[in-house]
Image 1 (cartoon, rainbow, N blue to C red):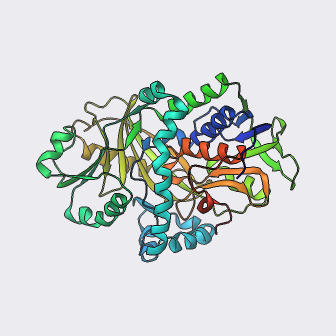
Image 2 (cartoon, rainbow, N blue to C red; image 1 turned 180 degrees about the vertical axis):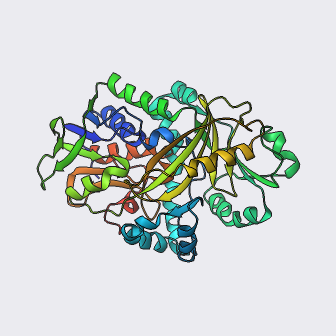
Image 3 (cartoon, rainbow, N blue to C red; image 1 turned 135 degrees about the vertical axis):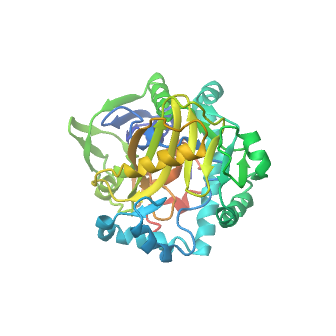
Length: 417
């Protein structure tokens, strides 16, 4: 890819952590940049996530044997991964691709791509934020995976081996050492694994707002408007149609998270994007909180000690954008949090539900619309939106500027299906 002097106006749709990071990266590359968001930056999925900058995010959601798990996913509405019956007909094409992505060979391929992104995730934030702000907004110390049962621990071995194969440091913690490492934990865990390379964000909303502020300080613009469509004829400068009027730019980046599919389709890219409905329970004033981020290996949720409280978050509900939240899932997370940590008995929690943009192969879409390099796509990050926010911005800016991306973006193309 021949490098060229950056010029022109790029409009970025969506001011979550991915869109904000992309806008700032583009501005620093020399482009005129407008970031368009219907509300306050960072208030979508970027607001309510577990805040992890993962060092081990190399295992896709779909794994071998997933086809035989589908009946169970339909039966238990509180399971870590569940499907709403009413959404099954609409989800079926996505679900078929999801099951296909779980073959052993495909899991290895996907894991290799994820590993390439993970390798640059934290350093990309350091470059985007600066060392001082990176230290202020994120916390080191690692993540602790804890297991109540031998069965859960044994079933996790292949995933940990896959993570280690990509260079992740994963250390076994003996039962008698678990509470020495994390005193806030209840004495119910038989095994633990410590991943020292993982960091967490002290406040995900503050992270996105800090990036948006840096964009404005660098000369970029943030426009509050609700995008309704894009006019993007081949070779022509795209026009963004919004409730507040029409926005013109030389190029457009669609980074609207779970709402990206319809916009991408209007520009010629029909991608199998769907929605994971994620929940959290936020304990604002816990009597005791962990020092580390902690992941339950039995129930697949994370607990993160943030500056504004203890957040218990995770799980996947496949149910689309329209159905009402099932806050029984958040209540379930609350009870698990109270079981995990001493001192949370009787503590109140605030509940939240948001929409993760999810691709069936657990890989984001990053790159131009096939046949139209005036429109770029940056969405579908699933559980790794925060982890991959800065590296996505870096990749998009490199591609638009004509620079060689730091990782191979071919597996992330929109037409890979």
